[in-house]
Length: 285
Image (cartoon, rainbow, N blue to C red; front, top):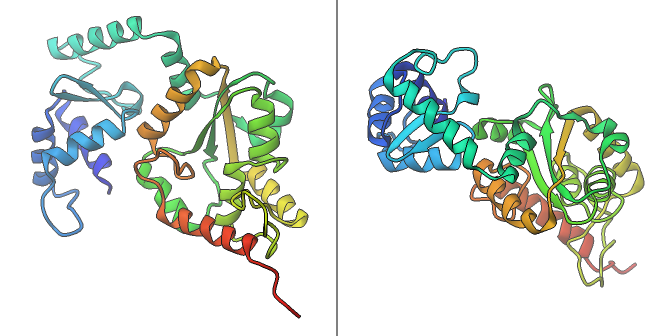
């Protein structure tokens, strides 16, 4: 069990908001989670995890609550008529009322049930600027190491990005179909075990924009179509940079590297390997 899962368990059992110290005490008492070195969980760890996993937890002052979306089918305290539960509902309603529209869009981007199969993206994604999210399907055949890493995130969002001019160009053409410099496409190809042709980027200014041979590109596209879902929101370009950065910090998607506080060192190594192969000078006879 991960720390955030143990925290959710403690909050469900309590049926109310708790401070970080109270949650740490409950987790340690239940022995559902221990640090790798065997030491008990500290309140500072709980507070940091609640901040990093804001899709699972709400913060109001010193109190940490289980987000309404994370209750699943049972929400003991928030379904009761207790004064604390009522106050929490009122506070959440007030926060929702004063938040600007872009915040609502970001929530819809990540949580709404409007994800569609990547195979259908060519038809439905518009040519407008916006933000996009790529999500693992429930039965995605991701290599074990990265499947386990995704589980530690507590969600299935694999990548978040922005399209300053056209979602259709950036998300569909580049990220899903390899027609251009798609960061996600290069990463998923490396994770699936594909490698660029040796020396294919030798002498070029940006050797990081490696690609794959056509047969491998076709195989990667088939994998994406069978294992990935996509969603998007049309957002003004002026709001995209800060919104994208916020989403990456909050959700730490497995395939995002830049700005990700939990960036995968394994993914970094695989991409570096691809760059070395593609940038290698041609060997002599």
